[in-house]
Structure formats: structure tokens, C-alpha cells
Length: 284
Image: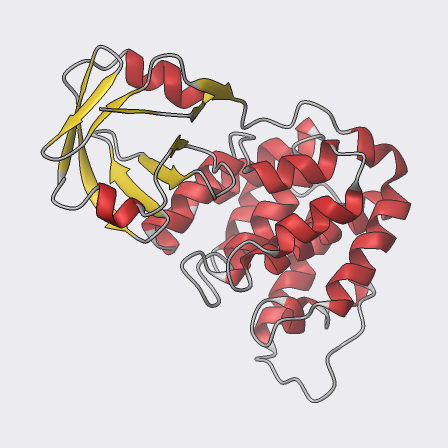
């Protein structure tokens, strides 16, 4: 039997109230395994080397693929997850909050935006959302020399930024997100990561956030299940540890570096979204 090290706060309560429920294997990687619940939510099991995700359980296992090998189904029973070759005890796990509890760094949003802008320009990945949003004038980012992109996406992102800035209603945001969600590279497409960053910033601004979150949820079917789950949680104000640290930590440089290390371009794309959200707040 393996004792879980950490578990997300909302996930702990949900699993402990669902005796007899089965989780079915969705996808598995070296450091993460995803299981799907009966109501369509995804639970992620992580190695102790990975930062906590929004609906995750951290295990003392270096190779998650090996640990869950042959385990297609997990059954919940009295704080235990029981599978063919894995039994996980969730009791006495450290409870981790996926919510941003303090927006202290937003008190100096102009300085934070400037710092993030420098980090973005210094670390532009070969692929990702930067080349698209750099063409959006309202964000005041330098374009990548020689970079080409389809003219429709910068235009769409530009209209989205203007709508957010002017407190667009959920219907207008919904129309814009139809042409954005699901666009880009990666397991979580670049545009989705970008939107997650904006959601994180505007989770501190309830009137605007409500409309943006509603529009995101209405378009989740336009992307893959992993990314849809990420945006669903973002629309519920739940975020991964590196995002939370950017808003709460006194060491901004370290928090930025941690976020940039997420995925191939995901961290940079999320940071682009956070920068965009801050830039709009500064103009508001």
C-alpha cells in the first residue's frame, strides 16, 4: 500500500464522499497518470518531483507509469483507492489548496507586468502563443523578427483583449472564444494556456471574471479533454502551484522561473496570459 503525500483540497472532499465510485484510466506518462471519474472529471496522480496540479494527488513514486502499470480501474473505498496493482491510502495526506488566497503582488501590478514582460522577451520559445499576441498593439510587446502567423489569430486575440478591457458580456466573449480555444501546440494548446493566465489575473475581479469564466465553460468542447479540464478548473478559480506562487510569493523571479519550466511552451504561454491580464488591468 502506498500513502499519498499530498492531495488537492477540493479533491479530497469529493473522493471521500464517493464510496464505490470507479475511476477509469484516461492517459499515462512517466510523471503523471490521469484517471477519469464517473462525472467526467479528471484526477491526476503525480510523482513527488512534479508541482501540484489543480486536481492532483502526489505519490512517493519516481515513475508513475510503472506504478500504475496494469491498473485500468481504481475504486474508492473509505479513503482508499484500490486497483489491480495499486492501493493508495489518501488518509493523513497533506491538504493543498488550489486557490489563490492572496493577490498581494497585484498591489504593484505595473511593476509586475514590466518584470513579466522582460521574462517573456528573454525566453521566447520557438513555438507558442507569443508570436500571435505580440501583434496585438494593446499589449505593447516587441514582435519576433521574421515570425509569420495567420492574420486571423492576432485579430481575434486583439478583439478579446478589447472586450475584456471594456467589460464585455458573456455572449460577446463566447463568440470570440469560439475561434480561440483549442488553438496552438501541445497537450494543452497554447491559446488555452494563454486564457488560463488571463483567468488567473481576473479571478481577482469578480464582475469581469464571471463573464469570462462562463464563456470559457461554454466552449470547453472545442479543445481536448486534458486542456478542457484545465480551463474548467481555471473557471472555478483553481490553479496549479506555480501560478499561485506568482501571485503570492515574495520572490517573483523564482516564481517566474518555476512557471517557465512547465511543459515545452505551456509555462511561457500561461505567463503571456498573466502578462496580458496585468496589462489590461493597468489600462483599466
